[in-house]
Image (cartoon, helix red, strand yellow):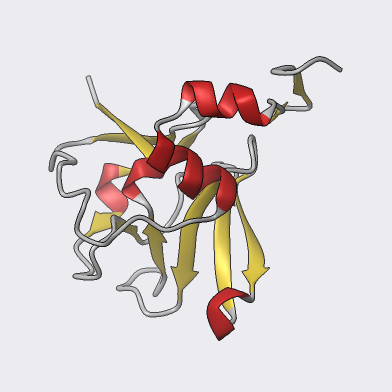
Amino acid sequence: MTEGETILNKIVKSEAEWREQLSQLAYEVTRNHATERPFTHDDFPEVAGTYYCVCCGAALFKADDKFNAGCGWPSFTQPLDGAGVGESVDRSHFMVRTEVHCDQCDAHLGHVFPDGPPPTGLRYCINGVALRFEEAD
């Protein structure tokens, strides 16, 4: 296997390749599980469209499922149907939370909490720097 090769839809790159592709903050968040400061990504437009993984381009969330949770990070009620949003247990910072990541490239996206609005009752609290938005045609 060579660097940058896709195997079974899994994107594998070296740390140097990720650093070259991503901004410093996007690298720290997606590859090292950091968190961006709250209220730093209010620049996403309020129009129809899709949010993609900044690392690999996988479609993750629909703008229709985005809501203002007041927490300072983009929040969604659910991933896009069929999106590869995986979950794992995060025991950092003396807490137990559910981390969400991109299944295609293992990028850390944020966390999911059981305090969201209907219909799911979930709040996918996502680092804005981990997303790229494309407006619908």
